Image (cartoon, rainbow, N blue to C red; front, side, top):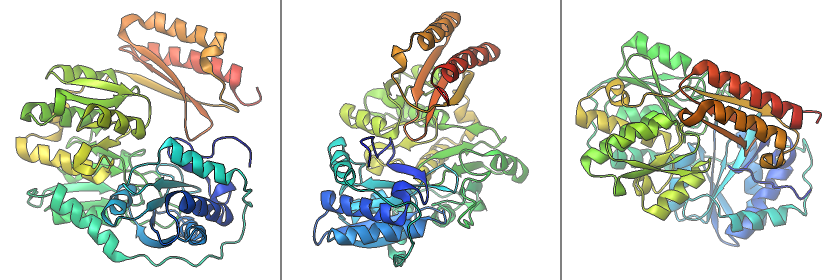
Amino acid sequence: MASEEIFGTDGIRGQATQGWLTPQGAALVGRAAGLVLGGKGAQALLAHDGRESGRWLEAALAEGLSQAGVSSRSAGLLPTPGLAWLVRKENAALGIMVSASHNPSQDNGIKIFGRDGDKLSDEEQGRIEDLLRTENPVTNSAQDNKLLVPEPELEGSYERYLIEELGAGLNLEQTMIVLDCANGAGSKVGPRVLNRVGAKVIPLAHKPDGKNINQGCGSTHPETLMKTVQAEGALLGIALDGDGDRCMLVDEHGTLVDGDGILTILGRHGAKQGSLPRNKLAATVMSNRALHIALEEVGVSVTETTVGDRAVVEAMRREGLALGGEQSGHVVLGERTAFIGDGLATALAVLEVLSQTGESLSSLASAYQRLPQVLLNVTVESKPDLSQNPRIMEKVTEAEAALGNHGRVLLRYSGTEPLARVMVEGPDAELIQRLAQNVADCLIHEIGPGK
């Protein structure tokens, strides 16, 4: 194929039945991953989310792995963090998750983990890409690989880990919790885990049919969850994303608590308990400044990283931190979860804080008073260096001058989609909307479709 990068910021992603996400393409990916990470006699673990293309892509990957001498076991419908944890526990050579996370059902993706359950290094990813560059997958090739039979004991092992290690001592005494599974990877294990730690669970979007993943539900569409929490008088609501590595919360009043709010709760509680190493956590440049303000009140500082959970984990390991995450709800609990971001683990950690303090979620989250923030997406045909475009930089400079010291402008490309993202933050909602639109309009003119 062409020399462009095959892996994005979170694996290979695109429309199922296209490119590397055809049966033949996935088999080639499986073979390359097996050659680089496994070898003859090695073992791989596979899992998928709730998309209809998940099982046949899993089967194609297993076929490719077998060509590299690697045997495959399937954990079936399981969250991405569950698969990463199982790779470590089972001492597998690698793990491959078939998921496009919060994307719509027609998309899918391939996420590869090394023996330790971590995402691949740049060197490992590059070696796999080098093997794939000599190949040319056929679009819409036949789906004739034998489907894998899921092993229930793998799913059960992950479930016990959540209950016994992360939910240990947590007795919710039939407290009502609403759980939105996004019709995704957490649809089976999520309700069971919360039931086992004592909650009375009202499950939403927990019946994946292959096409309904993330459809008006989950962490990107929490509106139904917010209404249900209020109507049922629940303690709180939990929203997972399609592959279960993100978590958004809804307080007892139906108000959304995003990843920054969750980091505020866990960071402030950790500081008060003396359990937050160096009184510091890691967060990306996309986090709202309100997070910094709320943490500074209790002496906690923030190490800023580039976008993506991989950058967060790298910073946490480098600085010896136990907490980090993203505004999107991807929270990492350090060594406690082997630096694996896990939506259910995040929810259990917050429930633990509620149990220890006796406070409500709204009370704990009140320290985080979000500054208005606008995020606009602009479709682009290519991704040239934005800093080298004088017209775009002029608009950014104008916006920064209008905000002064009371806001900021962040311009970046999506790592998984043909998009440029414009984020403007400040105290005046109308002003930041206008400034963001000015920058977006310039982007459209300079590098939008047809340019």
